Image: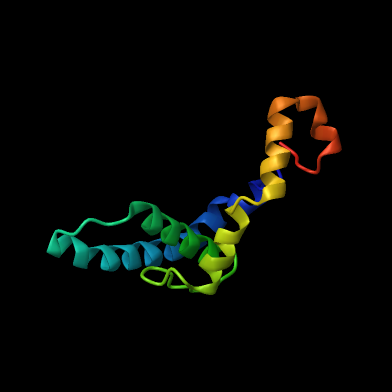
Length: 108
């Protein structure tokens, strides 16, 4: 319900140009490996695509993360999903004993 005002038809139409621009960047990035018959790391490509979409639509930034895995936006985005020792311990505790969730600072 909170996100519904964000995705009105008018706002989605305004986002379309950003999606299209990032799609063209993806196409240009994949043209070279396709011509040379190279294999590509799809996880990195999809991550770059998602990063560019999010940065352009939400923040209004052009991060150009295709071919630049060390861009600041990608680096900080990766840090969010890196497991830490405390996150692993919290996850194991919640999985082993769900009633512990109220004592641990992780919400499901």
